[in-house]
Image (tube, rainbow, N blue to C red):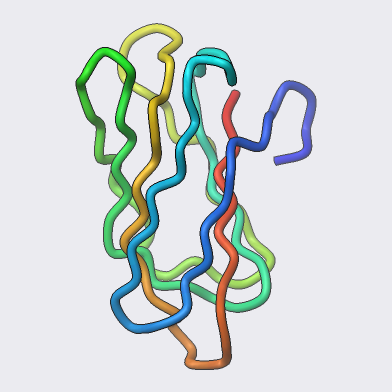
Length: 108
């Protein structure tokens, strides 16, 4: 995700079987047309991903079931034109039991 134009929006730590994090983003970060997830430290099972926009709507893209440590998803296009993200909600678990996974959210 460190390619030109991508901006880190935040991160969460999956450390258990049924973990949930809400990553605040807000209008100060700008507006985005796509997001990506990057996984560090350990693989993670992504159960749900919900992007909440400042206009009150939400978007739940289909996500890979397991994201391998050290990888990033391909670009996930957001509906409509550039959107301001209020928060991103992760529901995930440490898939290997080998320790916490760090999941970063990036926007373009």
